[in-house]
Length: 149
Image (cartoon, rainbow, N blue to C red):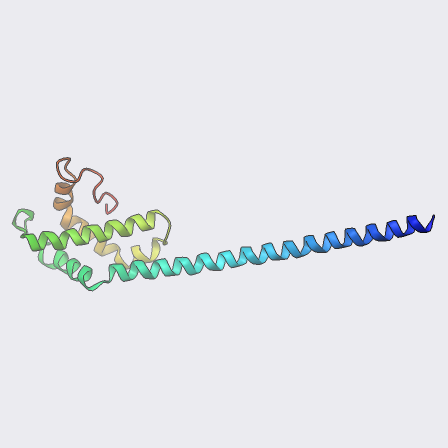
């Protein structure tokens, strides 16, 4: 074997070793990026949960839910005044938006169903006549507040 052939083998071994080391480094970087993405998704989900919770716990929304659950529960829909309709409308729209956000997968449903499930069901039953009225074709149509259900 000539000196040239020996050097050629050494250079090829060094080149292949460098290639393998480079591939190993890229593999480690991809794993690190993948793990970071999982952490980022978790943080994003937590931020979304907090934002939706704040939205549902806003003072005017809580007041509207209280009106629906205490004042309107035993009151005939046709006797609701404009202020009561406005409060009921706020409840329907906030729960509708929350349902859309949950359906899109931006937040998990579990914390909201566990904490607001009774309220959601009760408010839906109380406001059903308003929802039916708003979903008439001459008003907002059948898709209006359809996610609240």
